[in-house]
Every structure is written in structure tokens, then in C-alpha cells.
Length: 157
Image 1 (cartoon, helix red, strand yellow):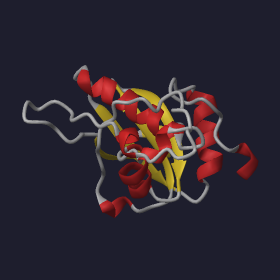
Image 2: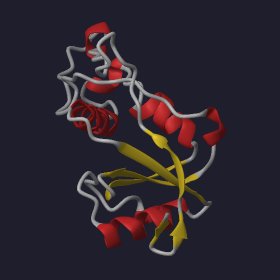
Image 3: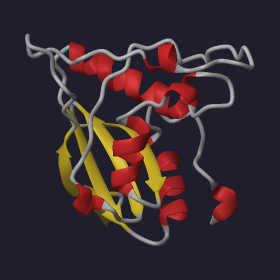
């Protein structure tokens, strides 16, 4: 798929772990966190969340896009796509649900779960590049994806 003159490759449909009724399993990892500092849940930490992963062969650096109904909903960059999805968005750690944690992981996962519950297909595409910060920033500006809250990391360009 060509996006702004960059050739993105299809990685997969994001598919979560399913329960016996073929519905996405729901997880509440914050319940497993030993909250000794009495931290508050972040804005997206309540859950529920789902679990998903991608093939390990995608341990590559670049830019990814999440498409829903053929619309670019999110653009991101990563040092390792497999880790970003397998251990970031796809497996919410208990600590990330609280203040100071990775609220983006929680926010993206909960959006994905909500769409999967509504029977939407979510597609992941990837462009391998060492210019990931520049290209991410460019794609966010040109496409204005609804899930992106920032313009990426232009300071790292």
C-alpha cells in the first residue's frame, strides 16, 4: 500500500486472544499491580484491554500505520515493531495503567478492543526505515490520523 510515496507492507490483521464464544478476551492488568505508592489510574488505565501479538519476524525499525475501514487511524514509529505490538500495545503491563505508565499503550489497546467488539477489522502496515522520526512526523501532518495526539518526535529529526 502506498502512503504519501512510501511503500508500506501489510503485516497482519490485529486479532486478539478469543474466549470460548469467539469474543475478544478482556483483561484488567491493573488489578495485579502492587500499588504501594497509591498511584491513580491514568486516563486510559481502567480497561478492559485485550491481548494480541504479531510475528517475531517483524523485529525491525520503521514506521507503522493502523488502518480501520481503510482509514489511517494511527501512525507511529518504532525501534522494533514486534516488541511495540507484542509487549506494548498488545500486552498491557499492570504498571502502565497508572500515572507515570505508558498511557498510549492503554489508549491504543482500548480503542482496538472497542473496534474489535464492534466487528471491525484492524489492519497493520509497516515501512522499514532508519528515518522513522521524519517519516512518522510527515505522515501525521499529511494524514491527520484521529488516534494521534501529537505530531511525533520532530525534535529527533
